[in-house]
Length: 117
Image: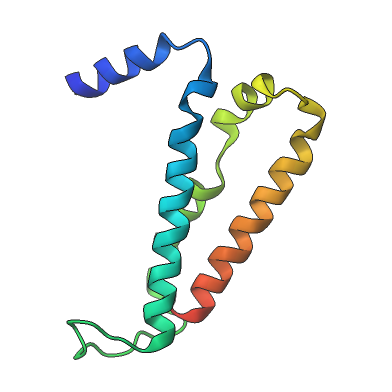
């Protein structure tokens, strides 16, 4: 807990969040690369070490509620919306930026889910 508190205190001293923009780009790159790698292995049929696993059904209603946490994490940006919008050079472009990013996330995750990864 102490490490997290120290990190949060240090982040609170930042007055210009643009200095952290590279971490956002690195995170985006990591997520997209990871998703593409998983989809590649799903599409090419390489089962890896665990080739003995049974196929997973397309819909498993007993575990559907577990997806809500991931969905909320993906789309719940309301905690960061005001600081991001406030630091934009052109805040009037905020609705378009949010709509476009939600659309891209929805399409990527839908394709990821349909492929069966």
